[in-house]
Length: 360
DNA sequence: AAAGCGGGGAC
DNA sequence: GTCCCAGCTTT
Image 1 (cartoon, rainbow, N blue to C red):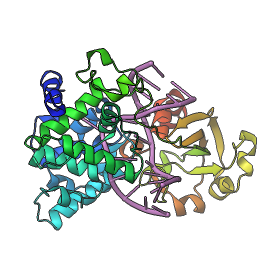
Image 2 (cartoon, rainbow, N blue to C red; image 1 turned 60 degrees about the vertical axis):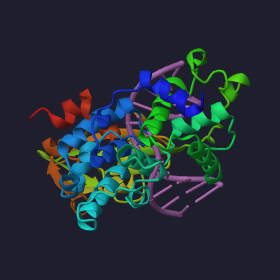
Image 3 (cartoon, rainbow, N blue to C red; image 1 turned 180 degrees about the vertical axis):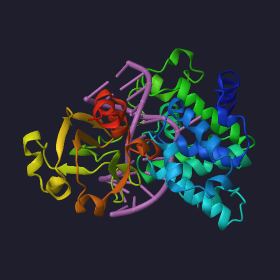
């Protein structure tokens, strides 16, 4: 039997039941694909339900505010995805008169939709015979057919694409592409796959040559950057101060407390010597009520060493008012904040000293 | 071509 | 700790 026939037989028995497979609405499929970029199904599913519930159609999304879209996205990461979804929804409503793009080439014009996602939407919804090649597919093809090219270079990608196009069942591209994804997620998994029950075991190049752990060729290790954050959780009566991250950096468009970033850890004794501290708080009559231990927050390519300082002040300052938004402490919940901050606010010290401090 | 962008789960 | 997830955009 040929590849697509064996794959189809496997899929008939093993297909996953996923919420976005219950619909043929291109909008919902699109949302699911963007949510699932570099994100496991198990992590993305709850976000999919919430997103669709909050923004049921492309029109609802196009009319939304960026902060509301980001709030639904809070905790999922890669926040540019949410901003791109909104921008693309506006583009569909305003430039395309609400008509959802229905070809691979037109889908590619949506912000945040690249080759994989365009292929997925085009094939799943519009049955266009184009491949949808993600990490699962690179792994399957590299192993079964012994492709040593790197999935991380454009030349390598082209090799995989050619192989998949030739293998493809062009009369059922939706089933074929979905079957590959499930096969990669369930059977041909990254580590220690159970090859004894694999339908391709007899002609899998990697299995025969004991290269299952070698293929696909691995990505280069990324070097991580260490950063030191000190967040100032200021209490001025029932108010605190926050700002929206604007620069091209992590957490763009999310809110955070006043931040002192230093090259090295900022010692508690040195805090009040820091220029930024002086600028914001010197004339505020500050009283430090809590200084947290260091929290290590891991990102793909950065290690954030963070501390949280809870400070009571009796007077506001020009430095604070110029650069920060004064908000009710109890309203922090309505802003989109990084998981690092969310975690701290959910812990006991924040509850005790910041959110519900003792009333004097 | 390479770097930047989150967070979490499995081992 | 390491790997990598239904990747994309910018440099």
